[in-house]
Length: 532
Image (cartoon, rainbow, N blue to C red; front, side, top):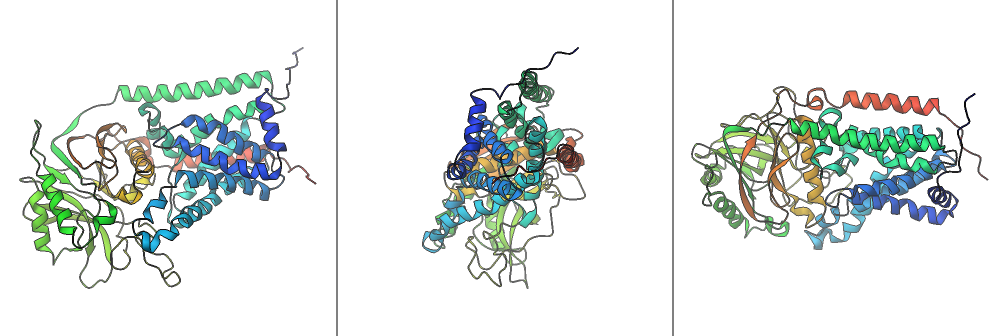
């Protein structure tokens, strides 16, 4: 006869902490939930304190466990999300201080409002996961799947904002980033949630010694295999570069308050030309010069600004190109486009791309008929979006996918239909966000896209973090935040055959997670406890 497995009232003192959370007065729990959410934001760049996910997600798990109804579960999820997003996105505040006299008063409301809106997603996570079994490992997996599926929803609902996905916390470790090539950023988020939340199950009142061993062993196996698989992928990674290509990245670090001043715009343009022509070091001369988003502070027109293109062409290497960002007008159209253009040494525009995924309130104001205020970007009228992502061809470069600003943060949506590119080229302007966590988080998301797609990434910011990243997410060269500098670099090659996620997309991973969520929800369904 098989001996009974001893049952303990949780592992003390962890079980005592869980009991204290669930029995605390409503006021203290309502304060603890956003505090735990805010703590979790310390896992993201530039801090990368990933261990904070363990206590933070434990609090979320326990509060959802103790919810007396789905409405209560939503409330705990919303409060956690409010703290999570307010702390993680505090840097939005700085964008409203660029024109402080006009928009400064909106800064705190913008941070609070954005966090409150995004918190509905974490509230939805809690509602989706509530009602199932309240102890055991299955409910952790269920909650992790719900969190990940809602991250996917966050990538497209209301135009989408998948910023600070859980998986980006690992960008400090090259091996830990590598599974994104197979399971994508969504898969990394799921694994991160499971790894961080599993220890909270050791406080369950019905925990057994055997299950404690299973939990701890599962965490060790997951972490070890995760790192080992990433290290093995890196061990076989090639360090080859594209022959005949030498890139010059120009980061002028122009303060946003000065960028569009009419009496300084020509000086800004001349500075970037001069930086592009700085004496070379020992390496080969550049073949392509790359400037940032809206590096040219004038409206360009393909037909009517030939003199401006000729001026910019001074920065082009012999036989090479200057790739830059500028607001673009089109004859007969009153709207502007946020564009990337390539100009050769003769001032001829060889290719261009108009940004497709615009920033609400930054580049256009949604519901314009109701909301009468102007956008943040200091140009006339709203921007309009382009015709969609595309692959551009510029003489001397492999075909590339142009991505302007935050277009690079969307998993599985950085490459257009048709010809597969061999390079991701991202131009941006993070000067809006000052010396904050925002530019670091943006750069981390961009690196994750390189791993997912199996493509090298070239990124140039007016201010922020510029650099060249290989197809494994490794930073080959970079210019740090708030540095005015030029850097020359070779171009890494793409992964031969591409990455799994780049070839097949995120759909298989998301389908598996959806099936797992519903199976675990209905297989372990419980009624909510009656609360007086």
